[in-house]
Amino acid sequence: MQYMLLIYEPEDIYEGPAGEALLVDVVAKYTALSEEMAANGVLRGGDGLQPSATTVKTLVGGGQSLHDGPFAETREHLGGYFIIDVPDLDAALAYARRVPVAEGGMVEVRPIAIY
Amino acid sequence: MTDAGQAIAAARSQVVAALAARLRDLDQAEEAFAEACAAAIPAWRRDPPRDPAAWLWRAALRNAFDAKRRLAVRTRAVHDERPPAPTPEDELLAADAPIPDERMRLIFVCCHPAVGPEARAALTLKVVCGLSTERLARAFLVAEPAMLQRITRAKRKIRDAGVSFEVPARDAWNERLEAVLATLEIAYAQAYQDAGLTEDAAPFAEEVLRLSGQLAELMPREPEVLGLAALVRYAEARRPARLDEGGAMIPPSLQDVLLWRADLIAEGVRLLDNAARHGEPGPRQLMAAIHGAHLSRRETGVTPWADIVSLYDGLMHFRPDPVTAVNRAVAVGEARGMREGLAALEAVPGGGRLAAWLPYQAARAALCEGAGLAADAASAYRAALSLKPAPAERLYLERRLAGLALSR
Image (cartoon, rainbow over all chains, first blue to last red; front, top):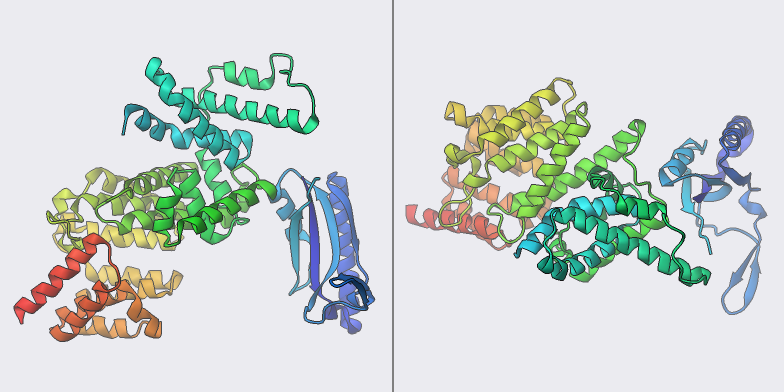
């Protein structure tokens, strides 16, 4: 079964010199995890996303409209994702637990629908 | 119940679990079993089966495979031709293999963290134990449609999220086992509340006895698993003594020890001794030890209330909740005097909400009565009676209230 791991994090933790050092460390961990996923033959895709400030969205409701940014109320933003192909939910959760998500963040595990 | 009905009820949990493990879909398993049961009644009248469980297992498997084939035909628009024989399904149906016992796997599926905690116990009792939605709705105090929806959603999530039909690997036990133990505890509480095993609480108790014993065999190194199995055995051992001839509840310290079941007590002692060897106390072991302390009256003739208070102190460490604190206060009253018990009860946090909680009012009534505060006791008994006690407890409370009026 394919699962998408959606990684949500507070973005401000990567601000400032300490944040930059953290980012270097975190990127190394992500690289190691995705290399392991690839070696295990489960990785189907995955990327980091640019900060939420780069967002442009189209909203539908009374016609379409363009908006320049994310919803301000949420502090955690979607920062990246993996798509993995594993036998079952427990295997997906085992990988999700190993995502080096920062304190205050979370990983959402969603089965991918087959139409 | 008819003979066929009894045979079906006896076979149900094993056959449904085996079907679910094989089909990896709880709904399909239940449907295939229901179809097999409907076919069994007339078929068995003509030709009684040698092994009803095996008959149902094969019939239900055939139904499930047929349903799958029909679906494949519809979605792929191929001709309805049976694939060349023998398919793996044919081989399975032809083999005289025993029905695999998959009930433990099924419990772990029903108690998966992907299923909301409030749905796990209901789903386990429905799927593993075969209790009706209507009975579960009553037990968990929700309307039947709400219970049906809760169970349906949980089943759908298990299927769509790809929950594995395996007993989890050892490194994942901690989290998964806790969910299973909590579920069995909730399930057993349903049976225990009903002192007389009226209506259909009996299957709750039977199933939890069996499942907890099976879990203890499977995981003999997990002290809390052994503790739960011991707890259930100790509590069930007292069941024959919990009601008087009029159907009123009798508290443990006044029960006739000769009615307690020696076989279950012996099993409980063995389990709890094994658990204690690990030197890792936990809430289920402590609760079992509290039941065990009550049972020791069989040998000594007295209830060791001071020991029971110490055990509750230990339990408070794991479960600092009003349930534990109220029970502890009652034990304090017996061990150190009713006034001290009342003081302990008044110190239970929970504020005004406690007043609307039956165990609190029942405890207050007993402590006030023991302390000679007849008017306070009477008002607490009346408050307890207004909170819808089960029939056996209602009779007991009514009798205490009446006794209070006489002694004045």
